[in-house]
Image 1 (cartoon, rainbow, N blue to C red):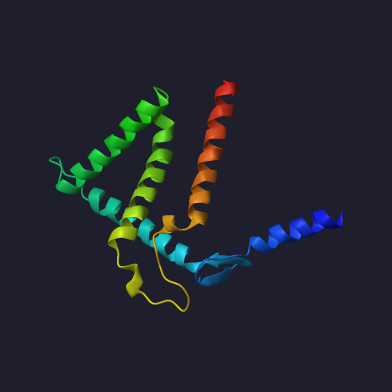
Image 2 (tube, rainbow, N blue to C red):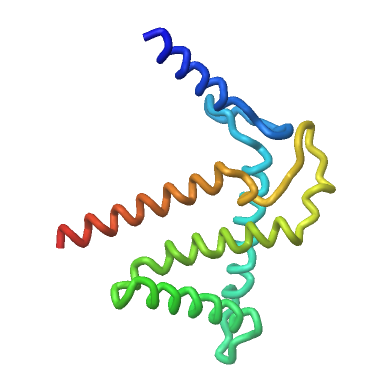
Amino acid sequence: MNGISNALNGLYDISHVEAGQHFYWQIAGFQVRAQVLITSWVVIAILLGSAVIAVRNPQTIPTAGQNFFKYVLEFIRDVSKTQIGEEYGPWVPFIGTMFLFIFVSNWSGALLPWKIIQLPHGELAAPTNDINTTVALAILTSVARSYAGTSCIAE
């Protein structure tokens, strides 16, 4: 029994291994990696800000921003329809949100000069650069897939 306990303690010790320095905040008793939270909120602000700018004053003859957003939404709709089939409608917001967050996160890592912002420890990078963001998106997708599977069985 002591060997199993030692093995579990060894695995627990490995879970605390980190690469590089990180800046943490304490929020409601939870330790949160500040770099990921900051950059995720910047990506969300970019997405919301661009959506507000594109649709705040709709024109009869669409502006360039309206045309761009229409193209993006039609692309997401068409991909959803191709992958899901005729029942794609309810899944377009989920798939679109995931696609846009990942797309803008990846490009923010390539285009935004995160390194000019100084932090007490560590440095800023794209949200998708952190395994925790990837795991969170995977869990959301798994839950959505499980929901879709059980709702089809219930019908």
